[in-house]
Amino acid sequence: MTSNIGHVQLPGLAWEIAADIHFPPGFDKSRRYPAIVSAHPIGSCKEQTAGAVYGAQLAQSGFIVLVPDASFHGGSGGEPRFIEDPTMRVQDFSYVIDYLVTLPYVDEQRIGLVGICGGGGYAVNAAMTERRIRALGTVVAANYGRMMHESPMNWDPIGALEAIAAQRTAEARGQQPRIDDALPSSPEEAQEKGLTEIDLYEATEYYRTDRGRKPSGDNLSLFSRQATAVGWDAFHRVEVLLTQPLCIVVGDKPGAWGSYRDGVELYRRAASRHKELVVAEGYSHYDLYDQPEPVKIALDRLVPFFKQHLTD
Image (cartoon, rainbow, N blue to C red; front, side, top):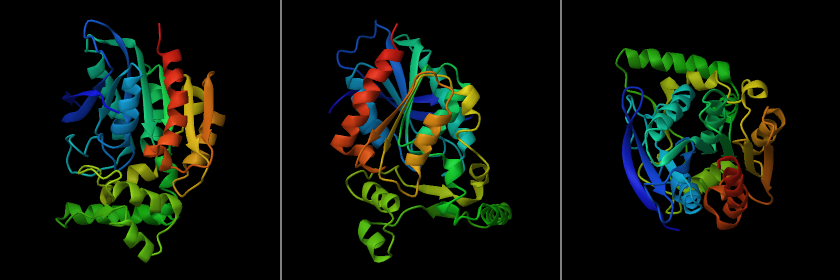
């Protein structure tokens, strides 16, 4: 799968956001196209599943697809590095759309958003208040705030917040930052340490091998800045504010990241009049990142969904 890709730096809050633009076949700059923003997972980058898989294939189906790096990560600006702040990730979408609406070949009335894993949770939260988003798709969307009350924080959110507070104080006084690496260095190390829970192990297979490894897909996070995530909820007020057409894709092999249950919960709670739940039976969270058969299941629904809701 190939596509014509452009590279841009666009204005963010106080720094630039790096993004790739995937153009459709036969792109004609005198036309106006529907556009989709593709949001990468937490710890990922624009060159991985959000761009190389979903961005490329949605572009092949006739859309302009813009794939940004999150602030503080990849080619985007923001200091200190490796902050994973949900409120900032959600704000990024508005800056990206500010850029899209200046492009003469983008129809501002036909802008959609698709998010993968944690990027899907962020996309849900953004769509509730960013009304320039006309249609929303998610692939194994995970509610990062819910996750941060569970296994990443040893099921002790209050204890985690106390540790975060202590670390931030130490760094303010000159101590070296604590930067956590979320994954083992290889599948072999994961096996040796008994880290074989399906989502954790398959994340390692994706990010720590040639299957998905990219220089900016580092899965690093600055521990002292994680408190906001512990107090955040991607789905807060979806019953009232999430009204756009919604297509939710999940795999039915459950794992620690909880994307299956998050997807079912989102489908149940969202106020959207048009909503659909697509279950890729027999596939896991990371199968839907890049494996041909489950990705085809996802795109066989996402492409017609976006064509239906982002057309005149």
